[in-house]
Structure formats: structure tokens, C-alpha cells
Length: 257
Image (tube, rainbow, N blue to C red; front, side, top):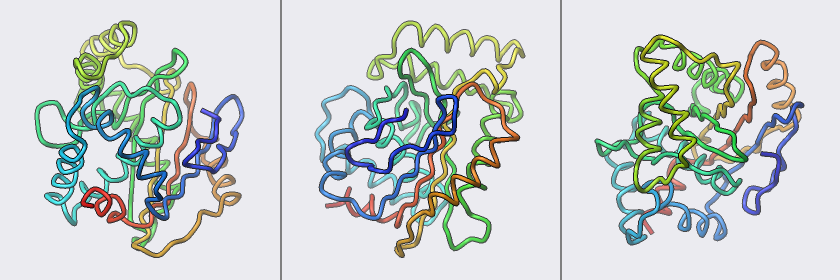
């Protein structure tokens, strides 16, 4: 995951051993970014469907409005923009944004992706920059810890089952080997045989919302902080996403055009 995309132009920073830090800055919904969202929103939210674009955008907008002012709204906006980035970066989405049974975003892992015959697990954490302690290093560590806890049954739920159910959905079109692997992981979890995080490819993501006042990320400072934090963490492969987003309303205003 080392390439620079056409829309998100900061080149990924190598952390060694084919691991990368991705610094993503969303100051506005530019025409190019807007076109990308329009192109990917069906795939992200519903999979391979032909639902009218206006209806797909309205559904997401209405959902965000129902959650207005909550951490669910913030988390949903953060996750959606991450999915836009991941699709642009060439990853195949093995899930749907929405929960399969409810009018809400998915449970379990925040995302499950594949690329080059490898599978990757996303965990997204977000916060407002007005709250002390909400920084990219802190949210990255929070996302990593949450992933570590989910795969060893700290929360009492089987995250692999949700991922498996999404991969089996007719509109996701996951490959047979991905479904088989997720079924094995699901059954192992039920049998209390837990996969260690050092055997997994992970995508911990941090989004900081800036309340409408733009501040760019100090890339060299953030790189130094992330490298220091990595010394205490284990994984098979890691791609860290750090996103500055000017406001929650950027996406909502675009959806409501």
C-alpha cells in the first residue's frame, strides 16, 4: 500500500518491512474528491448494486442526521472517508458499510479488505481536536488496542462471524478463499482458539475533526511519534492511516447537494 493516489496526494511514508504511514488531509470536498465519492458510494454502502445515486446519498445523509451530535455520527463520517481512501488505493472491500440486519453501520471490525492475496483488518477511531488528548498517536494506539482485544475475545463477541457474513453477501462478491479463511477464523474463535495480532495484517486508523478551522498535519513530527509507538506493538503487517478532516459537515453538505 505504498502508492500515492490521484486524489490523496501525500505519499505514504515507509516504516520499514513494507509497512506504511498514510497521512490524509481533507480540507474540502474538491470536485475530484466529490466525483470519487459519487463513484464509490454504492460499492461502499451497498456493494455491487445499481441503486440510483441520489437514493444512495440520501440514505447515508438521513442516517447521519438521525445520529446528529453523537459519537456515532462522527465515527460514521470518519469510517466512510477511510473507505473512500482505501478503495482509491486499490484495496477490495470485503464488506458493506451498513449492518446487514439494521439501519446502522456494521458491527465487529470496521472494515475487512484484501489486496495482492492478503487480507487486512481495519479499526477506526476518531475524535474532535477540541478535546484534550485527542491526537493521532493516541487514537492510533486506541485503534490498535481495540483490534488486539477484539481478536482475543475481550469483548465477548465474535468479530470474525460478522466479517464472514458480510463476505458471503451476494453484493460483496468475496472470493472463495477469503470466505473459507473467515469461516475457519470464525469457528476457531467459537472454539476459543484465538488468532494472535502478530499474525494479522492490520489497518489502525485515526481521524481528527478540526471544527471547521484547518490545520495541516506536521508530518515529520507525526512520523517520529508513530515510530516511537510502534516499538511496543506486534503485527504481521501494518498500514496506519492518520486523517485530518476539517469538519463532519463537509461530507454531509456534499451528500445533501
